Structure formats: structure tokens, C-alpha cells
Amino acid sequence: MLQELSIKNFAIIDDLHICFPEGLTILSGETGAGKSIIIHAVNLLLGSRADAGVIRTGSDTAVLEARFQVSPEAGIADILKAHGFDISDGLLIRRIISRNDRHKTYLNGRISTVKMLNSITENLASISGQHAHQLLLKEEHHLMILDQFGGILPLRERVGRRYHEILPLIRQLNELRVVKARQTEQIDLLEFQREEILKAEIVAGEDAALEREKAILKNGEMLYQAVHSGIEELYSAQNAIVERLVEVKKRLEKACEIDPELCSRAQELDDTTFQIEDVVEGLRTYLSNIQIDEKRLGQLNDRLDTLQRLKRKYGGSLEAVLSHLEAVEEELAGIENISETIADLEERLFRLKEEFIQMSSSLSEKRRETSEILARKVEAELDTLKMSQTKFEILLQPIRVSEATDPYLTTEQGAVNETGMDRATFMISPNVGESLRSLTSIASGGELSRVVLALKAILVQSESVETVIFDEVDAGIGGSTAEVVGRKLASLAGYHQVICITHLPQIAKFGDHHFRISKQVAYGRTRTTIEPLDDKDRVQEIARMLGGVKMTQVTLDHALEMLRSR
Image 1 (cartoon, rainbow, N blue to C red):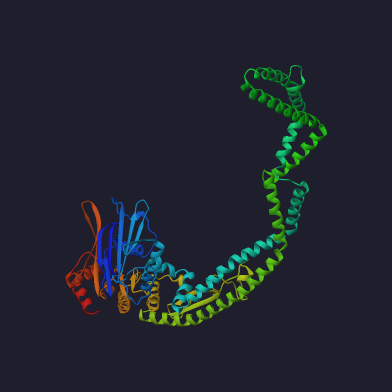
Image 2 (cartoon, rainbow, N blue to C red):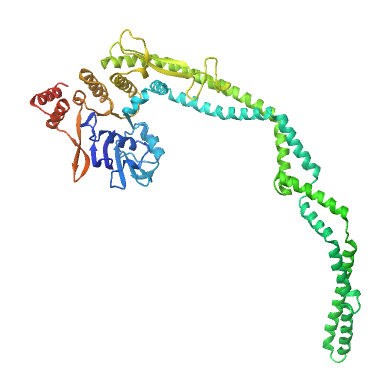
């Protein structure tokens, strides 16, 4: 039950606080006083999407708070406990709407998310306003109402889960069939690529080694000259480096006879001479291997061209080419198994379709049983709302099969989707002798309002919500019909806390409690206020609702009489 509502800096509301009691609470006031703003605030507290545009001019944030009393036996109590909330003091919801769109949500003082808020408030309160009228004009919502009334939403959810299990498998099967359809072309391409790479007999790092060999061949004459002159300078020429080292060594050996300390230096020169001779031997071997072979150079160029072409086609490096070869071989192996994979998928989908159709058929059967019960209940409720002899039926039809419908989502009767195999249309004949027509074709707002109220009166019996809020319930009605609607609201208040915004005194008089919403201008700013009405003030408000701007003793007496005769 909604106990308290606090609204700050929201639209034209500066600072407003309301305590809601049990029973039927009436909210009334002049048009534009802010009644719809209060409903908007409650919607936000129940999890609607927030928008910085609702913040009062001159403020940075709007703050909304609502406190709900939570019965320990209610289903929401288990949800709150599962999230670690203490429900001894009820549930306090707080939303801060910020101009920078960094809105915040708190549950019992704990920072939370809108997703969690929605999961918790789903069965906390129900708002029936202009949105309910619009939904009732959409046939897709008729099926939801039927399933909700029949208590078959769990079965509908199971059907939906199975549908979303089948859907990706259908997509996978269709993709595999497309692959198989072009399998021959694909295999030819892959086998060509595999043969092209295998034929090249690539060795990792081969291109770098070939480039080095190519550089040597192209520069063979320069290399020969460099090595040959090196040998000459070191060993072969007159007065070569080795020859000069030998002379130096001989002189040092004679000097050793004078100072033995020079012997080690002379020996080092001897070692150096041997090292140079080794270097010369290596250079001679290198010189003997130098070739200027134009034929081999052509072979290298051809091989490098082949490797370069493969690198351009398959990834930019020999490693990438070899990796592509592995991928090709894996894909070829996969294509070879595609027929088996398709057969397995078809078998699985066939089994899932059978279960899906069986579940959908069961759901459809329950809907047919439920539709008759709901139709008679709606007629009975409409009879109490001065629409006697109204005929109401629920037309269940199969879903049409389109060209895009997959065979795994069809039956002999029609298509099947996440809601099952039915389309529901509410059919009504408000007047005797008229044929049944779709509810969406009703032109009378008063009739539509009473159908909404009748459905709400029926559905709240199966809903776990403790608070029901009505806005626009009086659209298109008046006189004795309005009084009948008021009695119906008072009857609902025996089972739920009911809050009703109305312009009609015939409805307002049935309230157990009455608040007046008014708009005032002070210091150049408009602000909305709300005040509870005592018996005297309530007479004044009912009289205002009866008589408009000019209030006479007659309207006051009429108002008093209305309150006494409820």
C-alpha cells in the first residue's frame, strides 16, 4: 500500500507531500493544477524512464520519494528479502532526476538500478490512465489481458523461451544450407588455394635466406675484389702485413736477450700472425665459393616472385600463408561434415518443433476456455456500469503465415511465435441488435472508459498489487453513469487501496478520503499544492465540481446531499 508520496522540484511542483490512507482516495482540482504531474511522478517511482526535462525551472535536480507498506505475506516481500532488504519499515523508493542525466535510484537508502526497481515494483502498484485506454485499442494487448486473467502467463513464458531457443537454430540451419548450396564452388576455391600453397613447398623464413643469396649473386664481382685485395694485403703481396709482423717479431726476440720481459709480447705477435693466416685461409675458401651465375640469379628471382605473390594473396608474410593453409584445410574438413551437421540440426529442430507446437496448442486450449469465462465476466461488470445487454466476445484466430515464416514455426492452422499460435481480438456490441465489432472501432470514450474499468475490476482480483491508481476513468461519462462508476471504484476499494483522479462529483462523493490539488502563483512562480479536505471543505469542493466558477447555496446544498446519499 502506498503510504507517502513526496515530490520536490518536479515540473510546477515545488515541494509536495501526501500521506495516503486505505480505501478510496479522491484527488480533484482544476484542469492544469498538476494532477497528471503527480501520476507522472508515481510512474517514475515505479520504474518509468526519467528525463531531465521534468526538473522545475531554476533547479538542478528533482527528488521523488514514495513509501510503501509491504505485507510479509505479499509476493513482493520475498523479492525484497531475496535482494537483502529489511521490510519491517516497508519499502522506500527514492529517485533523483538530474540535469546532467546522471539520475540515481535508491531502495531503502541503498543505491540501486532502474532494472532492479522495475523487477520489484512490477506487482507493487497498478496505474490505469490514458495509457491503459491506448493499450486497450491495440489488439496485441488483448492477448496479454486474456493470459493474465487466465493465470497462464507462466505457460506463455515457457512457449516464449522455447521460441527463442528454436530461432537461433533456424538461422544456423539456413546459413549451413546456403553454404551447402554453394558447396561445389567453395570446395573448388579452397582446394585451389590449398594446392597452390602446397605446390610452392614453402619453408618458414625461406624468403629472407633467398634475398640474402640474391644480394650476394648480384654483387659477386664487388665481393670478389674486396676479398681478393684483403688476402693480398694480409698475406700475398710484397711487404704484406704478415711479412711485416714476422720482421717485428724477429727484432723483439733479439731484444728479449736484453730484457726477457719482452718475450711475452713477441709470443703475442706470433699468435697474431697465426690468427691472420687463419683469416686468410677463410677468405680463400669464401673466394673459391663466389659465383657469378646469371642462371641461379634468375631462379632466385622466380622463386622470390612466387613467394611474394603468395604473400600478397594470403596475408603479407610466409607465416600468414602457412596459417591460411591450415585454415583452408580446417574449412575443407568442416564442409565435408556439413551434411551430417545439417541432418543433426534438422533432427533437433523437428523434436523442438513438436514440443513447441504441443506447448502452444495447450496454451491455445487454455485461452479458449479462459476467453469464454472472461467474456461473461466482462458482460457482468459492464451490466453494473450501465451497459446492460452489452455483448462481449473474445475472438481467437490463428496467426497468418507469411512468405518469411519458417516451416519450423508453422502448423497446418497458421504460424507460431513467442506468444503462441493465437491472435486475440476483443469484440463488443454495446447496443441490442448491433453486430459484434472490434473494440478498437468503438467511438465512444465513455464506453471505452467503462470497458477499461470492467477489465481492471476483473483483473485486480488476480493481481497481487495492493494499490490501484485510476486516471482518466471518467473520460466521456457523466450523470448516472458516473455514479455507477463511483460505486464500482468504492467496491474495488474493499479489496485494494484505490486512488482516483477525477473531475466528476458523482465519482468524488464515494471517496473515503479527498484531496484537493490547486495551482497558485507566488513571487512570479507557479506552484502546485495539495491539501486534505475535511467534511466542510469537501462540500465546497464537490460544489465547485458541480457548479463551476459561480458557487450558490443551491450547489452547496446539492453537494451536501450528494455526500449524504452515497
